[in-house]
Structures are given as C-alpha cells and as structure tokens.
Length: 233
Picture 1 (cartoon, rainbow, N blue to C red):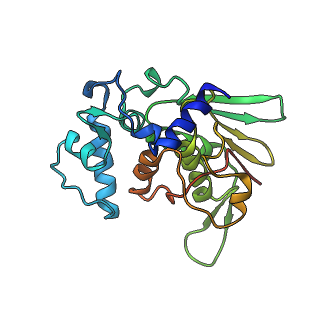
Picture 2: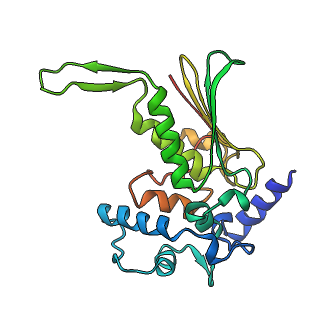
Picture 3: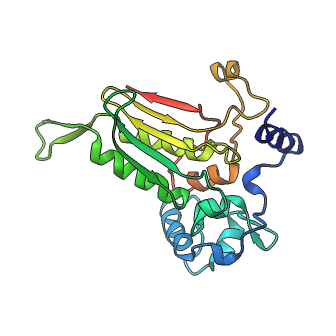
C-alpha cells in the first residue's frame, strides 16, 4: 500500500478530509486577497451564499469554512493561493494537442489557483475545438461546438475537485482528432467500489471544501466522486 493510500484510509477512518486540514507551512501572506474578492463578487450574483460586499478576506474564508483555527486550510491555498505549487508541486494541469497517440503538436502547463486553472484550460480548449454554425432563421447564427462546452467544463471541474492531491501525478487534458480525454490521479474514495457507480450511491467528494467552493458560483454539480478519466467523442 502506498503512502497516499495509507493517508487516505486514515483520513477516511477519522471522518476528516485532506483539504479541510490546516496547511502548517502557509501564512495569510500566501493568499491572494484579490482572488478572494473576485470570488465573492461571483457568488453574490448566484445568490447561493450572500456574503456582504465589504466583508474582509479573512472573514470570507471563515464563512466558507476555509480556515482551520487562524490559519488557511489546504483548500484555501489551492483555491486562493498566490503560488499553490509551492506547497503542492503536482497541483497543475498539463494540456496537450495530439495528432496521434505519440505525436504532440501543442502542449502547455497550467498552474496557479484551481479557479484559474479551470478558466485557462477552458480558454485553451476554446481556441482549439472545432465549431460549426447552424442557421435557424434568427438574425444570429447558433454556434455548435465540437463538444458541449458545459459538459467539458464540468468534467474539468470534477477532475480538479476530486483528484488526489497527495499523488505526485498531475491532471492531464488530451485533445485528439476524434476524442477528448481528461484524466486525474486518484481512485475512488473509501468505501466506494466501481460497482457502486452503476447504482444509486452516496455522494462522497474526495475534497469537500474544494467541491463546495466550485458549487457556490454554479461551476459544479457538487457531485462526487468523479471517474479518474473522462472521454468525450
């Protein structure tokens, strides 16, 4: 059993989650207040968590349950940190455009906060996905994307929310000529099994604090867990 598996089993047995624990190496100075304020603006628009506009950044994180005592949690660092990879070196997304299983014609590494990673990944994909136009009789033509953008975004958000941040592996997004692959490290949370996914089962997000943060702006279904690999055709 790997170190990551041992830690996950211990966390599962205690009822705790990895992302809710304090990041002991971090201080308030490692958080980006601007990102916190921008996030508050977005969630105020959805109405899911009406936080007053003048609330301090520290109080915002307290209301979102992203502080442990007086220090930032791991979720807070990943969501709003200035340089999350300083603490979690594998917390990035590798993007690749493949012409064949072994020929990469375009690649990029996306790091920064998890919220930023999702937006940068979507921007990269929008520049490379095929589109067609459908004339419906209205003045404006409908744009039909190669893959539904909302489905793609949800798959990327799920990969970010439910990955195992103890793993040295990183998230991969691979765009092929005939399909799109999204892969993240980590198996199913204990006690779920692959058979459980074929029937109704409890939602067990691996990183509930991170999942909740994506749910408030309406960027995620807040479901869990997600498969470790998605493939769209």
